[in-house]
Image (tube, rainbow, N blue to C red; front, side, top):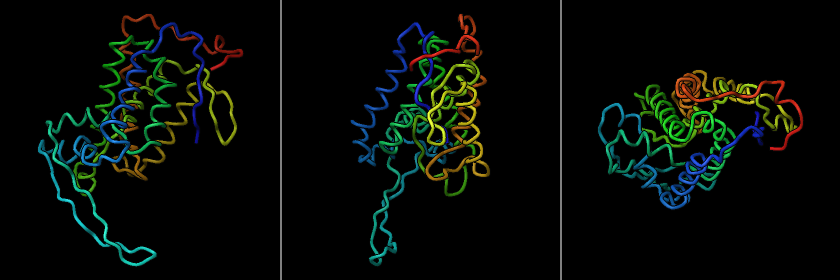
Amino acid sequence: MIFPISDDNRDRTEFPIVNVILIAINVLVFVVFQGLGENDRFTYAFSTVPAEIVSGEDKVTEDRIVRIKTVNGPEQVTITGLQETPIPVYLTLLTSMFMHGGIAHLLGNMWFLWIFGDNIEQDLGKLRYTCFYLLTGLLASLTHVVFNSTGESAMIPSLGASGAISGVMGAYLVMHPHRRVRVMMMRVVTEVPGYVAVGLWFVFQVISGLGLLGGEHGGVAYGAHIGGFIAGAILCKPFAIGRDVQPLTSQQYRGDWRG
């Protein structure tokens, strides 16, 4: 596994205000509206449920009590059902992008967005970057829905900014393949080109999601990651039309820097 620490931003000329606002919104929603992950009713109500997107109808299920076996014997556990969605179900494709399943989920996503999003914001401009982020996030969610339209997985809520952030990373691969990225790889901190840092991440998503594109393996919707990444890689150039985007070459990136 490869984990990014920082990247070379010596050519960045603008403060990434949109990126900071996106991070702030995600944190605000998790802390205030999700109650640090404790407000299940809000979380379930505004998450994306594939069956709801396919049918266009809200699916509400009752809480149910089940008995499970534990080391201390059978125990009754309440399983929370899907909550009524107070908005058109299609809007959950948007609201789910700003919610997270836990603190680790939130921090991991925001860290990746902080490192890779500022460069794409400068490439596209503030308005275009906002539209790009939301569009790739929507396409990522729709990819997840397509591969989870039937069966039990169709009723499992999905949430998180990782689909949109995958779109940002896809754009990073295309727009900044030679930008130096400081990463931790196999417990060693080193510097690699952007195409290595982001490319290896994408390969991991493909390998992990192979055979279960739509499903959530270990709670991770790899299909959404892959869909968002591909969308970002394809759409970044059209979104950059008319912008003066001139990333540094591999030779220009050589030399010492501090992230």
